[in-house]
Length: 198
Image 1: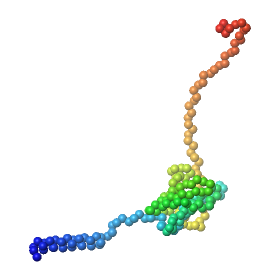
Image 2: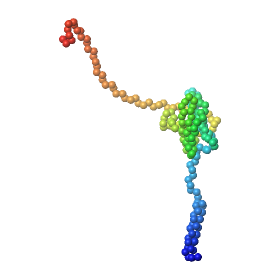
Image 3: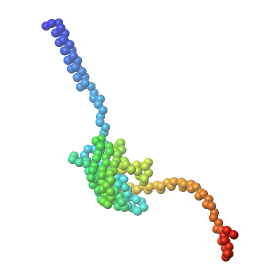
Image 4: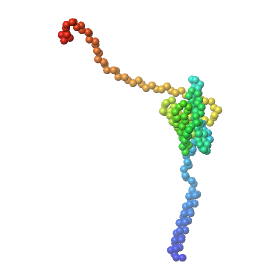
């Protein structure tokens, strides 16, 4: 073997051993890859979110209840709301859950009403579903449905919506003075005289 040939072989051996050593180092290094974000909604099972309550004034139910059922084949939602009394469950026609399991929306058409889409986002701890919209028509207070874990508990008392704040009465500008029109006394025109001669 020539000296050049021997140097090439030793260089290749050095490169191969370096690559082998680097691959062992990569395998032995602790995994520093980021963990995927925790999925709040479990992939399978049933979850119930509700703000159903009883009105202290008349004893009727108020609020709504959303039951999410997650199966391998499909996700379904049963939606209940109050209109004086608790409605029959309405089955959603479309249910979409984001891959992270943090928000979802569904479309329902209650009897004698127009179709509507309800959207919600889960709280960070997964213990509440915050719906788009506002409580008592106050945009600062979101509609929050707590996750139900005790199905035998009695419904709480409904919170009464605060009275709407009346805006201060607008100042009205006084009407411009109307010219006063005084009736002119009737003039008696004598026979044979013209108005020009009066």
